[in-house]
Length: 224
Image: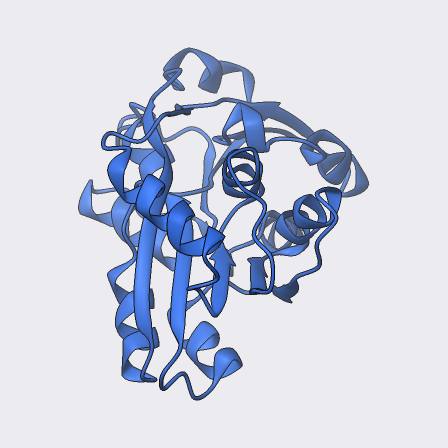
C-alpha cells in the first residue's frame, strides 16, 4: 500500500525504511513545519536554568527538540529522559546518555519517574502544551518548568496527495488540524497514531479506522 504520513520533514528520517519492512511505501506529507518559538523568553530562561544545574531531570519529547536545544546548550549533571529511541539516539549524538520512555503517556511518565518531591523537572517540547503530563508530574511532587524549543505552523495541504495513496496516518493532533482533511475524503483508510490524535479527528467528524498506541510501528502492525 501507498501510505501518506503527516510527519515533520525534520522528523522523517528512517520512515521510508520502516514502511518497507512492513511491505508498504511511505509518502511523507509535512502538513506542518517547525519554526522558532513565538516567544523566545521561556527558552532562554530554561537554558539558563540548565546551565546553572538547576534542573534535576530534563525531558525531551522529540529528536528535533534535542537538536535545537543542544545547539544552544549542552547541559551537564542532569538526568535526561527521552521519549522514544530516536530521541535517545539524538541525545547520544551529542555525547550524552538518556533513559528512554517507550510509550508517551502522562500516566506512564509519572509511573516511571516515581516520587518527584523536591525535584525540578524541565520539559523541552514543541509549542503545544501537554496539560495532562505537567499535572501528573506535579501530582508526584515535582516543580515543572516547560520551554517551547520550536513552534508548529501550517505546512503542505494533504488534499492533492490523497488521490495517490491507499491510507493516511496522522501522527499528531496538530498535523491533522493543519492537513485540510475533511469528512468527504472517504475513499482511503484513515489512521490515528494515538488517542489524542483520534480525539482531535473525532471533533471534526472523522472516525479513524485504526487507532495506534503512539508509534508508527504499532499502526503498521495493526494494518497487517
